[in-house]
Amino acid sequence: MTGVRVLAAGAALALVLAGCASKGTQNQTGDTVNLGASMSLSGALEKEGKLTQQGYDYCVSTVNAKGGVPVGGRTLRLNIDYQDDQSQPDTAGQLVDQFNDKGYHLILGPYGSATTGAAMAVIERNGQVMVDSSGADDKLFDRGYRRTFAVLSPASVYAVSIVNAINELATPKPRSMVFLSADDGFSKTVAAAGEARARSLGFSVLPTQQFPAGATDVSSALTRIKSSKPDVIIGSVHLAEGIAIIKQAAELGVTPAGGFAETVAPPTPDFVTTLGTKANGVLSSSQWVPEVKGSDGFFGTATDYRNGFRAAFGQDPEYHNAEATAACLAMVLAVRKAGSTDPGKVRDALAQLDEQSFFGPLKFNDRGENVTKPMSVIQIQNGKLVTVWPADQAAGRLIWPGAGG
Image 1 (cartoon, helix red, strand yellow):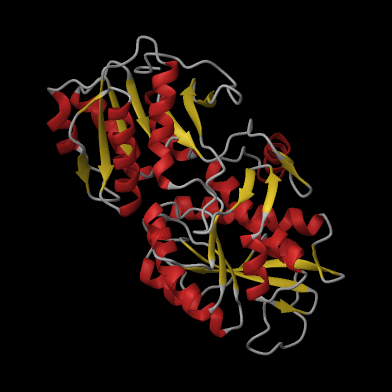
Image 2 (cartoon, rainbow, N blue to C red; image 1 turned 90 degrees about the vertical axis):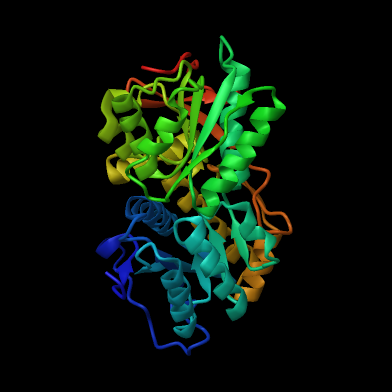
């Protein structure tokens, strides 16, 4: 699908780009604000990429239904052009460069930390501006870039949230934990932070086991920890590895007394669909849940967002959808605040943004991270995602031990 243009929200938007703006001004053509997005529409991260695209599409349809984007006394329609990066970082960087050549200077981030990192370097070089929806690795923001802003909580919070929830809620409290991690940068950052937090709380932490990113066979890692009988197994993973851990643990008889927790994978619909009852009891951190506090003028509350998304797509949103919509919303709010689609002015508006939303607070530090937004912890109970932590968001009680759900 490389090179194929996909219009956000499909033909229903019926957007006709008016006129032939010069190479430097296609952020705005006629009555339309144009955003570009390199997206994993194929490859290893296709499922997560398409969830991200779905969240962007819902933003477009909602903003346009509310009248569009106020820009300098006019109200403009919103449009996103997608290009397929095939889940490849180098391709993502090349596509962002191609958007710049076409005059698209306002960019929504691709899916994943590796592709986001590649895009960030190009954004900085070209003087574009990007809102990042899913590149969470803290190391991305150590590079001194000043033109990318991430709406999601950073990677270092993912497993820490799970450990904190177990520490506060689990009775009896487990004694030992082990982290199983994919070997990509995001997953290793997540595992290292989670391991440090677990040790600081007094848990015995076994040596972290790694396997290749995208692995569907993690049996070697599970076999290495089987005899140690850890109370909790925490996977720092994406969807494919997360499913493999639960499936192969059952096959190998690896049955932690407390159960399993994983990042990223459990909130993704395919996790429960694939694993069925084996998914019950699994904990996960989540960037967004319907119990999040806050609201905005486009999407309302988190509950309003869920209900509107359900009406549009016939399914409940999960956090990949929500963080993508939030990134798009941040761009819209910045354009409105700037009163312009000029990338320099939009960049400055993003840096000054301090808004509540259905996703929680949208406020960036000088590195471009949204460090004010906490993460939530969910547990799969009877095939459903139930928010169990923090207390002010909890929709149900933690089932513990979680093993066997």
